[in-house]
Image (cartoon, rainbow, N blue to C red; front, side, top):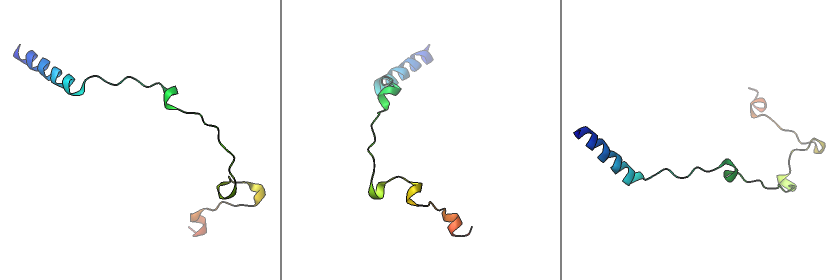
Length: 63
């Protein structure tokens, strides 16, 4: 019986310290949909028509 009272006291202490868990957040509330804007200049995306090439550092170093 003493052990049960100790467990109840420990549970009460935990509840006083931590309270209850926060409410669950829905996935829809954690995401945001934003329309992207076209980029220009240095921020432009890769375009094959412009003749840009992507390189690999390992190939450049001959590894």
